[in-house]
Picture (cartoon, rainbow, N blue to C red):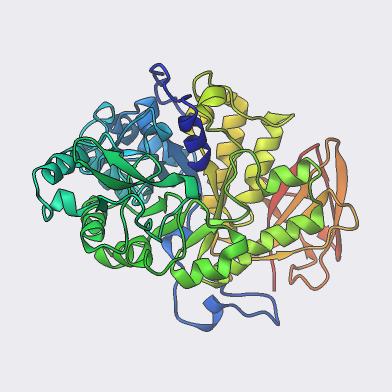
Length: 499
């Protein structure tokens, strides 16, 4: 989520005027599976995780937009009623809002003053937990902003001859700029350099926008551990780590400390982790990764409605959720959005679909409905959607969270929907096997009848389904062939009986 911000910052485009946010608006895994299939959850005693039993992310760019933690706490009940179950923060520590929108750490041990106090943060986390909600964050644990007071202290101490203080030991120093750079450097080669400090009279290893944490040096890793435990003590439920790698030297800090220091289920990922590296992600210990890739403007839904892929390609993409689920993990994605300060944040212009009021709702119904952890990548964009869009989008998230057959823990199989490349259907079955849902989609820009073949799906072929999204009864099923008429970019989510 941050690579594009770095390129913006480097071109000097993040020196923006203060943008005050609007007030928070008022509300307007498998267990039982079809015969012949087996999964990890059906063959061992491992229960699904908390994050496999909820959906609905909302990301707050708290530093950039000056959101008050107290205001978000007051709005928790409303956010939950809208279908939101996970609050994401970019980022909770005090960072420079003009560098990477606030993720560049100025002080790891305080919150941005415009957001409130550390007590406000802890109160927010505790209140979210009381409501059954989760709190996660985008988090930098690989470098510190070069203007950070902690680093400025280290420079002065080094100049005075100190080589053992906590501050000095937190960084990699040299007097010879031809020394080899640290080998574990997350990012492109140009992001890693020896930088001369006039104050210290020596070079320090600079990674991205400040002194890097060298994971081969004990003093560096001791500070990282201290930082992480500080935030874990606040009750946080997970991290999307900045950049990231699967190098084993990073694992104690990216996975082991978060999962052992506190016992709550953790959402652990890094911004470059995606389904293409699922095996490595799981072996490393991540609990989630992008279902497609780290993109602000493209996801598995946008790719089928823009013609990049078809129903077969969509099924291949959604199968990534099955791979993660069977490994006890999740995949995630966001509604299309943008984080470019010059073109999105300052003028508040964000990407849209051609028919946003219906397509973004179908996007939610497909991505959340298939078991991908899904939500809004930026609250500032979400509050600018039309009331109609927001209401229907939230209704999808409420529907998903109210039905175990639609949660990430539920099993998923494709249901044949003929040869139409713009039609798609799937069956979801709750982890406990007690609920089955049939989901059908029309990705065309015109209404159509979509006919699905229920042969071999385990869905009873003589019943009247319940419409989970709209309410009431759906057309009766009277055989293996079942047809529904859907509007342009329409969908239906049906509660069906199965055997």
